[in-house]
Amino acid sequence: MINPVSPSQVRAILKEYQIHCRKSLGQNFLGDANIVRKIIAGARLDPADVVVEIGPGLGALTRELARRARLVLAVEKDETLLPVLKETLAGLENVIVIHEDARKVDFDALVALKTNISSGLPYKLVANLPYSITTPLLTYLLRKKFNFSLLVVMVQKEAANRIKALPGSKDYGLLSITVQFYTVLQGSFPVSRTVFVPQPKVDAAVLCLSRREKPSCYGLKEDLIFILAQEALNQRRKTVLNALANAPQGLNLDKNIWADLLKRAQINPYRRGETLSIEEFSALAKAVWLYLKSQYFID
Ligand code: SAM
Image 1: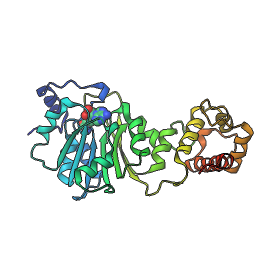
Image 2: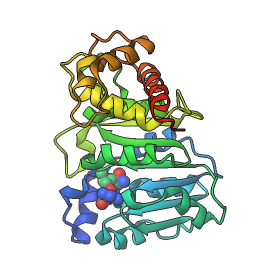
Image 3: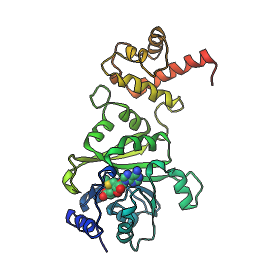
């Protein structure tokens, strides 16, 4: 049985199966048993757990997940890795490999289908993500409100900094707001680039994020919160008032109306957008929503 737990073993597997790592799919494979152990510990697995793994690669994490969980659904886009996974995962009957692009998967429907339990069963998501799709994939997973309880995710160190960033810092942006709106950071640890084959140019970090039962400011028009945040943060050097009043794709409200809405949300219009907290964007979204409702009689 093959077992990708060190860089030399990963290289041997790649050679045996003549796999040429595809940069476009972020194929930097993990070859370090200690990091695998730490990721598994972060997932706090229970024998009853259903786990969805995105991008199993050569199966380094998949094997260990399967040993501790009831069922592992591993979604891999690259067809050429399927024969490797067949061998790495041989003898493990609780793993199903699904050949699919994770960005097209309805994860709740997938879990319901494979467990025969109609929707509602919470599951855990584990992923060593291709760096190039970190932001779109996390946004997809969170904004679609899939029913996972925990997300253990490896991302580029810089992306981890952006995810964790607080208002006012240079890393604070839409990714920070999206992830923090829906999840709470339970823990994180750094991962050196040296544990991957091929070795990437940057270090990584693993984040353990639990889903908020109810996102902060839940029940408000969430889309509006993200639209406002995007507009305010896209033009970081402007005051929030000028950014909103001059947003090219904006809501097209007069500057004096924006000034009034910011006042109602108790936000100083001369602050820069990047200093606004999620709660402040939510308060602004509420003010905007009430205003639009009064103008256009919408629900
Ligand atoms: N989990 C393995 C590990 O830790 O060694 C592989 C991680 S590697 C960084 C990313 C994996 O995601 C690769 O196996 C790649 O083929 C797969 N992948 C890339 N884009 C994907 C997508 N859109 N959907 C599913 N898998 C994808």
